Length: 209
Length: 132
Image (cartoon, rainbow over all chains, first blue to last red; front, side, top):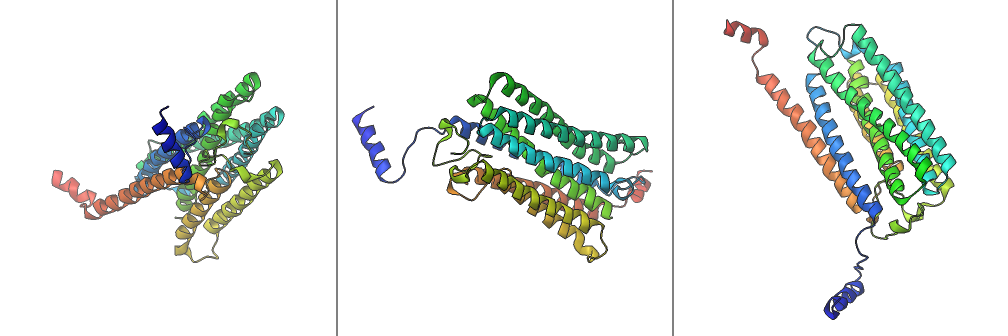
């Protein structure tokens, strides 16, 4: 490095803006994944906008008030909220490198996620069986697209969760595995945030009418 | 730094989802998640109660539900995703703010335009008659 550059770096430090080199990989990876999550939320926003525009177009078919079972939705919400909490516990366990606590917290998260998916699957099956499938009306098309897309995300998240359990089991808490755990936790918590919008806009507002 | 990574020691920024260096020990962090869980349960329960009750003035219910949902999203962001107003979180917050801007433009714009189109469009039975 030339003397000029050294002097400039020294002056920069003296001015209070210390240059610590490029950001650590954990921050770069986490930030990149944060941008992806925000883009995913924008995609969900388009589905929400579509749903909000089409919610009244029932083509003489059933409305949300006729179809939605709020008790079922409350249990689904409880499952996802509890799984978000246990996912947070898994993050702490990963940070202190406690394999047993990590696997336990992730296993509970997985069970809660699967419980959510089961209830949602039952709801979809019962809607289709009652003749209220996605082909019945524009309202139901939008409903199945929006809620189904969230369900697909939860399914993908559950697969990712099992992958992380296996990777920690075989490879341990290596820095690259830790970055994947960070991204997984971001993804899982983001899914819970989207579910807040789903149960408010689709189910609670839908059954109020 | 509580996450114990040498590579993540950086006083300027913190990765989204990571807690700041002075986040405390394991017990303190668990209490943080428990606080978030408690607040989220409270807000969710209020939402479900408000949606099904006759005790509240009915036209206010949709607004109340939306406000409760936004509050709960804030609780999740702070207690689960650890997005804070601290100087080490500036980049994360700015990215989030841009995302929120796009979401608002997208949803608000779509609803506004579609409501106008719906209002200005001839009723469907008249369109059918014109096509005959």
